Amino acid sequence: WGGQLEKWQAGAFDPNGAEPDPTAPALGPRVAKLAPDMLHFDGPVAEIAIIDENGQPLLAGDHDRRFFEAAWLHKYNGTYYFSYSTGDTHLLVYATSDSPTGPFVFRGTILTPVIGWTTHHSIVEFQGQWYLFYHDSSLSGGVTHKRSVKVAALNYNADGTIQTLNP
Image (cartoon, rainbow, N blue to C red; front, side, top):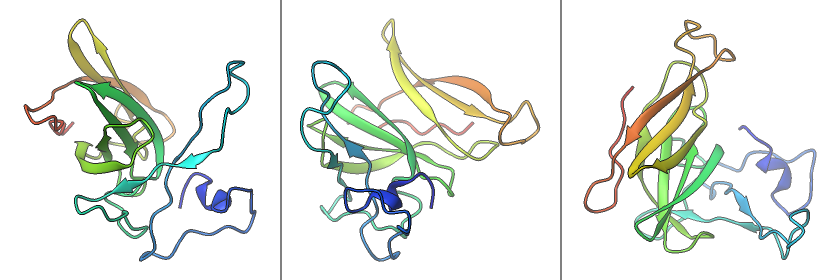
């Protein structure tokens, strides 16, 4: 398991926290509203729910869909898109919601595995075109900590799904 979410499952740091059982709900990312001073939270930290098409939480053993790291949120045509890395399966995936705090319904893959380990990213619109910024290790021949910045046009289908990129 990556990141540190397993250490914060109960809302406080636990140095002995462990990854949940594969049949248990996956650990979700956290969200909190910032206070006007932008230094403190204005309310509690909440877990963002990522669910499947049947309204069930994604499971910890579902490595092709469960949250691992590298969260990003953008809004397109009135819908919030929460995208993230799946970690050990090297996918960049996304889920959608009508609210920035979820729940988010898993929708699909944005980017298939790249050369290198992680798939950290951002999604922005510039002059009417959406772009995916990410990195890989192609210039270093696959040395995972020597990363190269990449950019690709990101396209949406009429139903709001994102067209998968295969670098």
